[in-house]
Each structure stands twice: as structure tokens, then as C-alpha cells.
Image: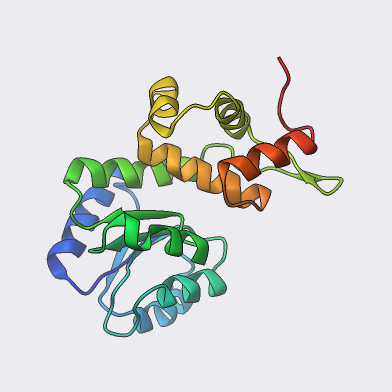
Length: 200
């Protein structure tokens, strides 16, 4: 399989590719500077494991690229890279279907942690089966719900699970999407009303 990196800034694209090669040395990494080149490439090479998408491209801006990719390939995770501060665009991108939002001003260590977190989440037992109209949680998601119930912050959860805060964000976004909710409060309400919160 492969990872598609879509960014029209060569230096940023090189930085992303460098990190991905460290994390996934055996993966085929394909680079693009336009969104329009992606679909023909997929038709030739197959659907990728991950999209790394610049939020502002010559042929796409705002969340239009995210919407297009998620509409066409809903099962493929999307990591968004943007020069805009997270406070400006992060929630909008997540609502559009992005799996994680990474500021371009992030250092290599932060970039690596974010991408590692996303790639780990993809292989962290997230496949679950809906039963009787509800959602069963994976082991990790059950842990997260319990920690949310305890009022733990992302930093507290990261410390407890010995993972990065970026990884916590990815897991929470996956949990919210799994349950069809948009917040911690809604996730807890859903878990309680559907018997997904393990009582001690």
C-alpha cells in the first residue's frame, strides 16, 4: 500500500516525507503538489493507507480538499497540515472528516508524534461491531471513556497511557466519530445510556 503526501510547498513536503520514511520505511510514499493529481494516481496505484493534505493548495482551499477525499475515500484517514493556528481551523477540519490537524510551525518531534499517533490508531484494535443499534468499544476506547468519566484532561490521559497528547486527540476523535458525538459530555452521555461505561 502507499501514503499520499499532497502539499505544494517542496520543503514542507520533504519534511513530511522524511518523517513518514522513518515511521514507515517499507511504505510507498507518493508526493503531489495538486489535489487534482490524486484520483488519477489512485486509479493507477490503488487506494492509499493515509492522506497527508495541505489545507491550502492551488486547486483547493479551506476544507474543500478534506471533503473531497473523505467523500470519495471515507475509510482512508486524513492528516491535515496548515499554516493556520489550530484554534482557527482545527475544529472545522475535524468536522469535515479530517483525523488530525497539524500546524506547519510544529517541530520535527511534534510532527513525528502526531503522525505516529495517527498510524498507531489505525492499528490499535479500532475495528468494532455494532450490536442492537449501539456501538461496542475497543479496549482502548473503553479506557478512554473511563478516563473521561474521571474528568481527566488530554495531558493526564497521555501520561497515564504513556502516549503523546497528539495520540490522545486521535483516539478521542475516533471515539467521538464511532459514537456519533461531538464532545466529551456527549460521549459520556452516550456511553452511560447505552451501557458502554464499565461500572466499578
